[in-house]
Length: 402
Length: 83
Image (cartoon, rainbow over all chains, first blue to last red; front, side, top):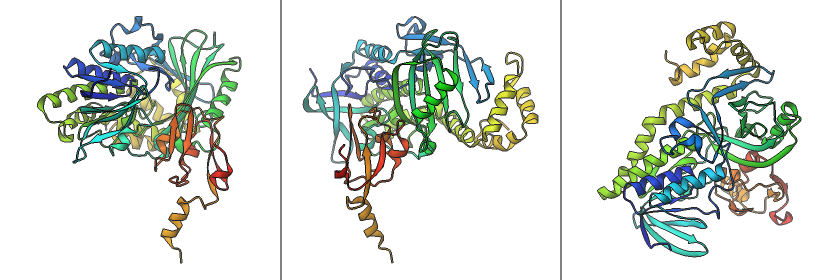
């Protein structure tokens, strides 16, 4: 079933890997996409929300897909005192079922000519005498074999082995990691809005992180928490989440599913390519450093990596220098944004919880459809002068223009 | 005076009387610990988490990171805690 050689091998059939494989195949490359699990999409390790606008470039007719649970058009941000700001988002968010979603995205790859195989695990890299990656030792459905390729794309998630073997992986500081868990909770009728993604912030709720409530239906929601890795020593993420549920949704007693995990939120690995190998998605730390969302960022990275791999193979040069066009393109689009969001997270992590509560309380009084951002900012600063000291970091990072 | 090299070796050996213990009942096999382990001493096999005590440096990053507190530092040599 499996060939001895391909143009491109992609490891990991999440959204980043599937899009990378699809783009390579669409550019005429003989492509293999392998997934170590028996089933694509399981186990789910995700809040299952992504932004519609960018995702629409990769998937057709999203709102009518079977994996869409709800579409939220508003964000609401809550503090520990019960105040709440409702922000209309720039683009609607999709709350999806990742089990079906991942398989559907992988299907679009198969449909584009990619050979997709589950129960196939990358055991180690095959390298030439100069250390360039020329293929993989794969254990496919129980049989070990060497498979050669011109380019390997590593999309093997947060615990990526390939990035580590290739010497690209760095171990992030605990403050650059989110630790999280999520419950799929039922019994929420009348307590949540299906058109809103709810966020709860504050030291007492989630130290250095936040709690989200993403409605899956009128009665069920993904309720999850991330806390900063350097604050995870006392109460566990799960302990904080249980406390939150008891306090905010005491009537919701059933948990229909649980997800746990750690998410690196460094903004991206320092190097994304080496000779014959590229890293995309969570394996490359390409999650939003503030929210930890990574589906769309992963798909864009997959697009750039798959397309670049095809170009480089056609030109006959798959050395790091040539493959780094992917890295350059990714950084041009997201580099600054990733750095800024990381700075914002660090600022919020350090911010005094009374100030954070106060900011949300003040903002809760604004008519968001009428007030201009500049006016809101000035009013905010007069009410909370301490914000000036905190906002210095943002001005320095270039997020707020001087 | 301290012999630094000796101290480092002691940290890496089983002779030191504490080690990372895994509570397989609590573990959800999410791999959060695997992604933060500097010497790559943790291994996740679908529904089983294993640790290589020989290479583990007892840095405790995995213990701090675990979302469900399934890892803890235990007294004694690794053989004293079945995992």
